[in-house]
Amino acid sequence: MSGRVMDSQCSSSVGSRTTIGGVGNINSTPISARIESYEGGEKKCISDVRRTFCLFVTFDLLFVTLLWIIELNVNGGIQEQLKKEVLAYDYHKSFFDIFLLAVFRFAALILAYAVCKLRHWWAIAITTAITTGFLIVKVVLSKLLSQGAFGYLLPIVSFILAWIETWLLDFKVLPQEAGDEIRYLSVQNALDREPLLHPGPITDGQFYSPPESMAGNNLLTVQY
Image (cartoon, rainbow, N blue to C red):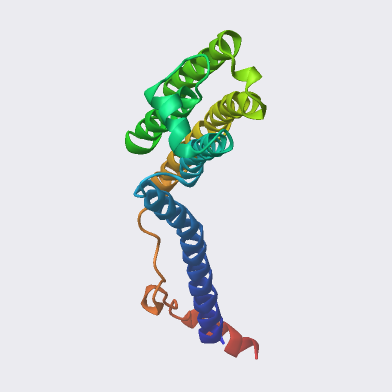
């Protein structure tokens, strides 16, 4: 009778220890997975949100280039207009400087945020300020507005794209990367606070049955 009771106690104790060890493993596994996933993301060239920003900067250059090529075609052919706008450049009539402004934005932003992986807003602040100032001065002093729809379209598109890039970096890229880094540090601290070794299952040899009392057996015999 006492042997069966002790066996049941042993099995329940082992089961409880196993459950405790399993809980510890379950709690540590997601933390380790999050650490490994973040470290894997850090090994990439750039984060996903920064890659999206760089794609938009590339779109800015391609879209302004496409509009400029269409403008050259509409006004009398690409070759003739290239001679007028590039070789015989006139600040008051040429769209070539707006194209160069898009090239400047592309080169500066890709160098700063894709190659150097800068985590500050000063680079895009410089490009946006230069773009805004140049376009305002050109629209006021030049004669672009008298050259049809492209005289309105190219400056407006270039101005809007530059400010969209600023918004993407300042409100999407930098805050999300800072939040990812904070979460990584908090998870790493939580992982460091966990015990390195969990208690293993207890063997049956650690439990023993006390010897039966002879006085108790004699008393039962006399009473019977």
